[in-house]
Each structure stands twice: as structure tokens, then as C-alpha cells.
Length: 271
Image 1: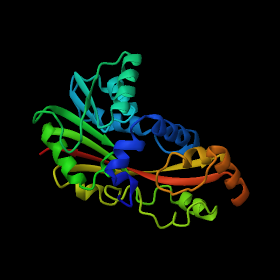
Image 2: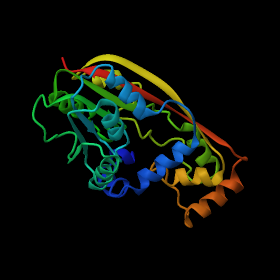
Image 3: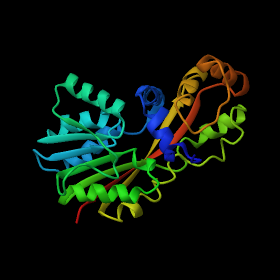
Image 4: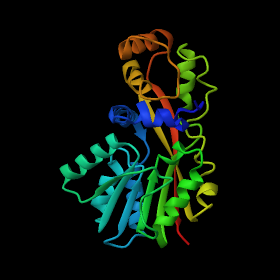
């Protein structure tokens, strides 16, 4: 088992993404807490809209629950839009959201190291918040490059190594995980600092942008709901959110609880 849950294939295939509930709960908790930072899906769509022709063929790799997929469908009006993910459950959610929105798009279940797509199949590709699940993200980027047409654009998105570091200290201070501050970053394989270098292994980097996002959890219940969705910590506490909330209330200073994350975007092209 890897020390980093995001790099443990059994966890990634299992409880992390076997269903869509954990990711939905995590996203909801973060969106409620967010007080600063642009909408990531909007930013991705803006970056692509500036470079991608109308009626393009577009890939959303590691699409998750399809939030970016929907934004691409709305903003770019692509000729073909394929949402790719290894999780059948997440693809089921994405397919349903596309149908509910009346948006055209298909879903493809695949490992991003081995995309079942022909060479030069797409004008544009997005890989947002997914490449840090690979111990060899350069190999996944090689696949993305293979699937792009010459001159095609990729937008790759990740987070900084120290994202949400303030929560490490809160979890440690509450006595919930004595090793919280020393556990590896979930984003250690593909992060803000190596984004440019790893991307440049197979694509020409055109631009890199970094933006700080700030989150404020209003009370212990809100923080507990988020902590139950993150696999980073080893919290040995029974009783679910109620018990976790009570422990946080007893052991931490009064709320709110603020944390930060840097979101980084690389815009690159196939030579």
C-alpha cells in the first residue's frame, strides 16, 4: 500500500471512486467554504475558448462528476465531446448530468495511461485534478499528446503541495491523527511546482497560471463533513460526523477554520 492514498491503485479503484458519494460530498463542502478564487471549470473553459476553434473535438480526461464537461459543452459547443474516467460510477453521474442539461457528449471508461482513442483524434484536451493519481504523470501526458492533433491544446490543472496544510495542523491539534502534519501531500506526483517540467516532457508549454483559493469552514460540523471525505488522515474515531464534530468542538479553538489551496493551470500544445 502506498503511503499516499491518491497513489494507491486499490484505494483509487475501491472506496475513493467506486461510487460518486465521497467526491460529491467533498466538492459540496469545499464549495460552501470557498470565499476566494475563481471557478475552476469557468477558468478552464476560458483558457480553451481563446485557442480552440468552433466545432472542435474535445476530451475531458479524468472528468470526475462532469462539472468541467458540462462547462465545456456549454462554452465551446464542440462537435464531439468525450468525457473519460476510470470510474464507472463517476461516468454514470456525468452521463446523467449531460442528459439533464440537454448537452451532447459521450463517456469513455479508460485508464488515462492507455486511452482507447486513435492518434490525433482531438483538437483539445483537459486533465483537471486527476494526474496526481499517477506515479508517472508524464506517461499520461504522453497519451494526451498522442491523442491531440498537431497544434492541439491541452489544459492541465493541479494543486500545490501545501494545499489545505492548515487542516493538517487542526487535525493534529485535535489529537485525531498524530502524524497529520508529516503525511505526504496528496498531490506529490503532479503539483504546482513540477507542473511546467512534467508537462514539457511531451507538450510545448505556452502558459502557467497560479491562483490562491481560500476556504472558511463556518463551524465544526462543516469542517467534520469535509474531513470525512479526505483520505489523507488516519482518524480512528467511531460515531461518524456527530462524533467528529463533538471532538473538534472540544479540542479546537472556536471557528471559523480557514485553509488555502493554490490551483495551477498549464496551457500547452502538441508540437
